Length: 78
Image 1 (cartoon, rainbow, N blue to C red):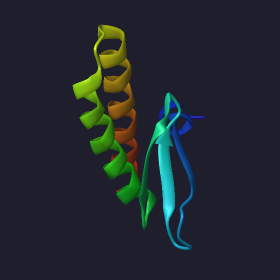
Image 2: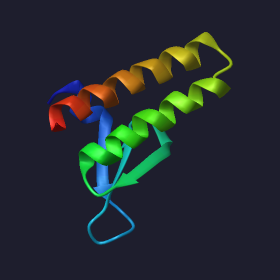
Image 3: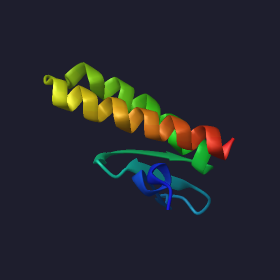
């Protein structure tokens, strides 16, 4: 399977029509939306916000890769 699709995990959301999305490498950062595209776009924003707390180069690189993966996923959903 595609590496990007394997990295972006989609599960049922808290509401009947919602979905929850997280990146494989950052399961603690999740976003919910009415569609996978909406949830993934919110996730990309949350991951970008987490860059403020990334104190090491390794963490920043990991977050950058996750943001890229999620952004590519959003483009494919669109």
